[in-house]
Image (cartoon, rainbow, N blue to C red):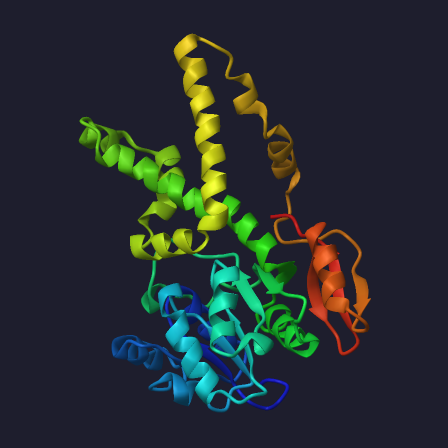
Length: 332
């Protein structure tokens, strides 16, 4: 299976996410060519059976779709290379956890008219190609982001890739909505997990505490074992949304501290999210949507319509030559 234009998908960057995507697409019969700045990583990817180019220019030269899977700090240089060497017809997407800053970088490189943002909502605390896995991005939720000037044909191409060989579902959003939501469910948890780890690291009873640590500490700090440089880059790139979210966390914790110190009530703190807990307990079939599939015809300003629908909770589950298929978001 190859792209609609008969040209390969190029994956630039073979870390955890880029490597997992390249493995998955290759396993599903998609014509993939990949590259990475590291010669050792390129060699490992070749040993894994992937088609690997020695540089960005060769990787993207004939691509129909280019996936940027490089660290955020490398994005400006890589985007410039893609702009110089990819065909003008090639659609550009990415897998980064922050969307507004990436759009700014690709636009500065002259790729803004070709770009559709994307973010697979999956990962582990590990990094690098050796940690990548063919199953990591299989059938997961993606966010795909657009602006008012999105080329509908390029959005179609990204939706077809994600709902087709990746077997995923998609929430089509604006960069701003994605980045605010990602701050709440990904970036702030990384910061809080890091602080939990920091608190133990600096405690006088550190060794005793680590010896007693069980499930709650393990679960609460898992993502703090991610490469700190990667986490720092992610959080700082999304500072506009992470900072205010953290301020609310701090305010709420200060209220708890005050209540504990004055023997006051902590009831509201521990019960505010009761409706979220109840909804979570009712979700017994992860990934399965029980709602009817609707058709959104590929006419008029259908990308804007998708953004409105997805902001209310539906997701894209497929795409046909004439319509996008949407359904209520599957339970997670």
